[in-house]
Every structure is written in structure tokens, then in C-alpha cells.
Length: 165
Image (cartoon, rainbow, N blue to C red; front, side, top):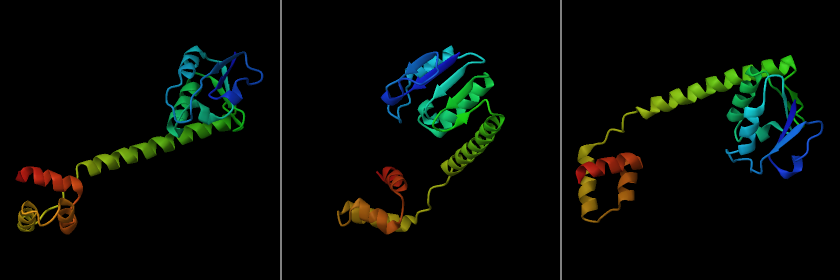
């Protein structure tokens, strides 16, 4: 069976589809209730027709994950304006390569984030800190002037200040 999906008024009717599903959502919206229903209706051997691939999700990663899931379920996807058809073996192979590239990039970002999350706070000269603390208590300088003078980040400054009080 051939199903159509559209996420805006311009694509309510796609040609040569047996059944049409439609959501009225903006590009950035994650919730697409009719697309979720359609994903559950699709079976092996079915075809999903859309005007553009971007109608299937709000990010490249979401669209790519959906395409791979559909391929594994042996569901063909056609995006008319993108000239995209998963019945083509080259398109299928390209999708798997893109998935691997995206997975590798995601793992790199995650590793980098965790690496930086464990970074030690900047060392502070406590003599200088105490001198600025006294100036601040006497209202001779502001907290912002203090941070700038010591060249320390906002989070480090307030964490240290909390310990002083």
C-alpha cells in the first residue's frame, strides 16, 4: 500500500497514494501525531511518500533515524522534491553511511562534553581573593569588577563566594 504524509497545507494531496495522513505543524515542532499513527500503520512492503524529507522530523538526526528504522522494516520512502527513493540500492547504502557518520559525530560530541564536564575549576590566588573580598565587603568594588579583575568565570566566582559566606 502507498501512504502519503504532509505537514503543511500545500501538500494535503499527493498523487498516487492510497491513504493520506496530515499534520498541521511548524518545521521545528517535535510532536507530529499523525506521523506517529502512520509509523504504526506502515508494514513491510508499504511505501511512504512525502514532498520533502524534512517533513519527517525537526532535525537531521531524527529524520535519519526514522529512515533507517523504515529501511529495517522494509518500508520504501519516496521524497518527491528531494528526488529520494529508498528502493534504489545506492540511496540505501548512502543512508547507512550517513547514519555511521552521524553516530560517530554524536559520540565525539558526547565524549568531549563528558571530558570537559570533569574539568577542574581554575586555581585562584587566595591572597588576592581575600583582598578583593574585603574591598567588596566595604562596597569599594562590585562583584562584576571583582570577577573581571581576577579573570574568573561566573560559576567559579559564585561557587567560591558561597564558601566565604
